[in-house]
Image (tube, rainbow, N blue to C red; front, side, top):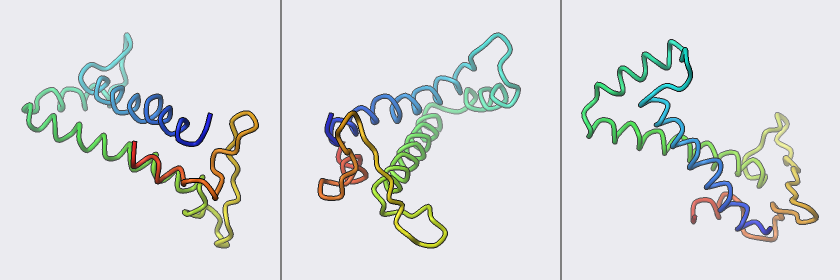
Length: 114
């Protein structure tokens, strides 16, 4: 797997799944006894017009994508998690392949291009 393939998989199994699951849970909370807060959110969401529901879905999509993008920025070392400002020096490998090699296209740049 290379870094581009990794991003395609992340888009599918992380971003798309999180967006779809969040929207599905808002529409119909899962479980025999769903969390009370989720039920309240669901009642509110289901009372919205289709236009407003689409706006909420768009906001959910934006939030998920910004979260994944930010996390990839951390993996790429362009957004520091160190208080001292030092480089993150994080290494993401799959098998023997370094996926966040700084000489390759950065993960967060690939993500925005998916």
